[in-house]
Image (cartoon, rainbow, N blue to C red; front, side, top):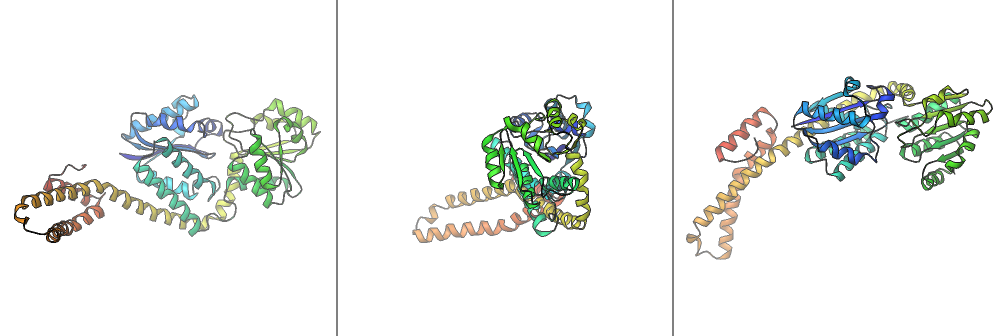
Length: 423
């Protein structure tokens, strides 16, 4: 069996095709069970963010698992596999593990070192656990991935400066407008990204912030936390005529701002320009809105280009993070190898205990004259001898597991003691 990751991200696929292959929270349970039920996939975790959709799987057969995931994505987006297969990337075994560790460390993000991805990796793993699609191998892998991500942020400066998509969106808007201090801003959405943008606006000195969301309670809650005002969707058109900047990041699967609905808003603004930063995937704003006079519409592709400057500022930290990834990769291999040797070691110890108990039973008649204390001493002696004899073989089997030497020793152990452990 192999660890495999098959995915697509903001670099490998055009945005209009990529956004059709995102898996939002509502669809995630069905997606997990769909993949888990396919012929060549054992365990599975799906990581879907504004930057990537990736399927991490334990593959019974590599080519079969690749076809299973490709077909799943085709069904998800209602697109023929030939239309996107060339845009997929595939990693397996060591490279798949390294890729996940790099993702958790923030090296594979639009904003290098971003903070949000670590929580997104944790959530993806937890959801797979809740749905019963993550097993012992992926549990161990994702636990180490989270540890890698934490080390990268605490032991290096990779997360200094602008290290989140939401903060980068606000910085990009500030660069376009020159100064946000006196700007009127409307945020559409009330999730994690929207809250990140709201926090960044506070840091930029923006006092006039409004929040609109499909759920009024969530809009009120976020607005209260930042000292802003909530806007009902029925009053959205009025709010849009008064603002300087619209930031959007909802979980909608279709555009929430359409061209035909927005044209009257721009007419009402009487030529006042409006900057829109849409970091949602799928996009919240119909791309045709950009054609309206006075509108500047930026999306996740624009954000990626803007964030490239952050890569250059923190490039000297990349080597340190790569070193951490190498160390954690070694730790994971050791842990996985020890876990792989555990069934054989357990079989060896069961065999030894059965021999010990059989010998004590065979000599039971000769031990009848012993009192309880003497009998306990004999049993303790027998257990101690077994433990001493098995200590070095146990350590050696665990330390060499996963290597050619380990495989030879494991095979020899099975033959010598007639064990039924896994080959």
